[in-house]
Length: 292
Figure (cartoon, rainbow, N blue to C red):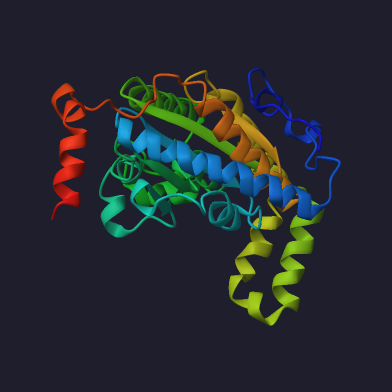
């Protein structure tokens, strides 16, 4: 199978999404790719156990992408071998009344993983510079001082919001959270195919919403907003990875391998040593149990 490196997908300079492929040929069939994913996620699960025991880092995985990009199934397949005590998934939807009573980052801050755990944000704090940028009228529900009309939401407003997001990520990174941001890069044609499957397969009908078609009309606008967000916020401590997402098994494998390969670089993540007294008495403890 074709070798891939996480640097191939990492955004380290200005990108144009329209020039980045949404497909990648790994030179193997789907079954072989799924087998490689299985091996990788098993190793990632073992690494998660070590990180849990080590207890000094948290890992935050942010997943963004257009509707049907495959976020839900990616979470299911990539983290299948994780111990449930070491991972928590948050799917952020339209803010509740309680959430709107706080600043827009509050609901994301309280959902952050504690040290030793993985947290997955299915849609993230970036919705606040994506959906709200395409639909600025949504900002009015936040009841922000000095924002009285949609006309008050200008370039300075978005510049400030991006600065707040960068500061948020820098703060949590400085305090032990390892941040991975994945943009599942889907083509408009493949989204069409996936929406059609939702309509054609009865068991998939529940996933379809007429609103999906309305948002699809704004495809180009969303692409520009994603591109701007990625370019403004991909930094060494919180990088973006643009993942070709037209082929779901390929996308899942790339994400799993990226996580495993980069987390292995933290050679200080080790299981804690037993204290000298416990270590010296292991045989004694074993004998006590055997003699019960």
